[in-house]
Length: 346
Image (cartoon, rainbow, N blue to C red):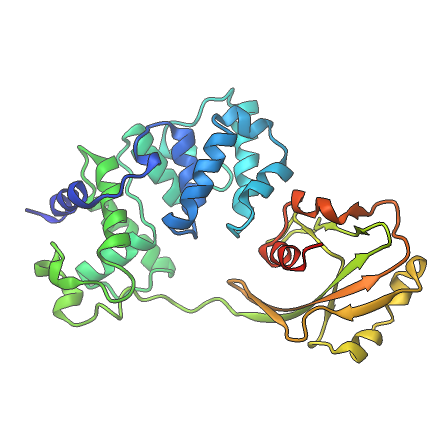
């Protein structure tokens, strides 16, 4: 039995029962693939179910506000996925008359859809012979064939895509693609896979060369920067606060936060006082302030670590654009902010 048939046979026995595997609806498959980017199945499944319930068709998603979509997405991170999801839904409804592209080439034209996602939708929804290459597939192929080319190099991306295309089962591309991804998720896991029960062990080069823990190879490209955030949590006598929408581009674009002051280091109360906040909030003085957390809350993102403090600032009255503290949970916010709101208990 060759490589692809062993995978498909393993999949028929071991696959998980997941809702997006019980449909050929391209909208649902696209939705699941976008959610599962950078997200494990156990975390993404509840979000998928919530989205399908609240937006059962692409017309419902397109008709929603971006704020509502971001709120439903809250906690998944990588919020550009949600913004692209909403944008693409509106594009399909408005420009394509609600007809989902039915082939790899046209799927690639959609915002937020790259090679992997286009291949997954094309094969699973439309049975097109288009091989997927995601993190799981990189791992399986690099180990089985003993490939040491870095998976995130230009050469590696091309090499693995060519290999994947040569291996796909042309008679059942949807099953094969799901089989190799599932195999990487459940059997050929990143750490400490049980190679003794692996159906591919006899042909696995990594196992023979004792390189299972080494492969796949990945170049370290991301430089992590450190930032120091000071969130100003204003509260007035009417239990109102200031909550701002982040307009500038970035990972938290269009999410809400308390007014933010960045500093060059973590501040204590005396150093915070020297920021001369009165100059920035003249109309709000006088005010009293206190530090909510003495120790920085460290929020780690893929490319930056945020050392965060929340300063509680009490004032008599806030401007007309203030909102009730009781309504804070209605707004989409980064996990860092929503966790604070839950802990503080306004």
